[in-house]
Length: 333
Image 1: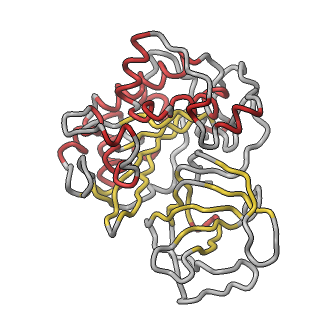
Image 2: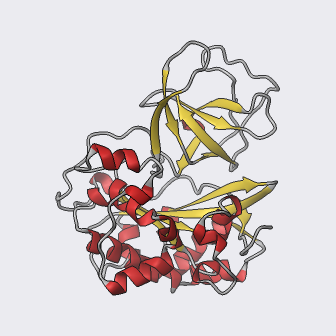
């Protein structure tokens, strides 16, 4: 079964490594699924220190070797040099993707993906872990133990698939601003109740995350801004009202395994839903923390859609991702 990728931010650029050639800069996290050689160069396979990836370990993603990469450049802490190349089939990507393919029309109707493959990836963040490495962001500086984000999942995004389904009918200026100047993107137009809930459930809205999510992913959703975010928030309510959230809150400061998390989804939403869940972790000063859960869904998504039905309509993923990680608490640890 082909492992599906989680989408995120792509920056086109050029990186010099020996002979000059174009590469695609990426941001996000590469999660190794196996122990694979992490080489200094692709062609020569030179590997100072005989460095290999560790299954379940997360690494900063730096670049792909081309628009449709065969190898990813990752950052391996402690290696010399730190930047290494690995084959893309060594793991999966969380928070990044390869270059976009031709997008669907923004008003295209939602259709169930062929063969049950995920039509959407629904990304849930554990905000305390995110803030360990982003402590200067507004949403992290203002978070306390009493904040919603301290004990609940927060919304990262609802991402139409397949991989590369980005920026539908988006102009060049907005695409350019989405590469880091989110404050210059057009404001998202929501009714008062939806805006209030979004600001709570998506703390990154304090840094205009919702503008980025709409421009890159929402424009390919087939509905307007109000419906896109209202649908995502309705799904978030189901997760945060479930035993999955309770499991995380109970284990703050401790560890959870991917098997425990998947079992919690089976208990909360029905047998088999856990097979549609992937866990992403990252390392911070020797600590492996759970940063995100991604759920495969197949639609159509409506205001009263059952998360259980959407998950079971999607194909299971053959990789649970990070095998275990810490459930971080608020504040720098």
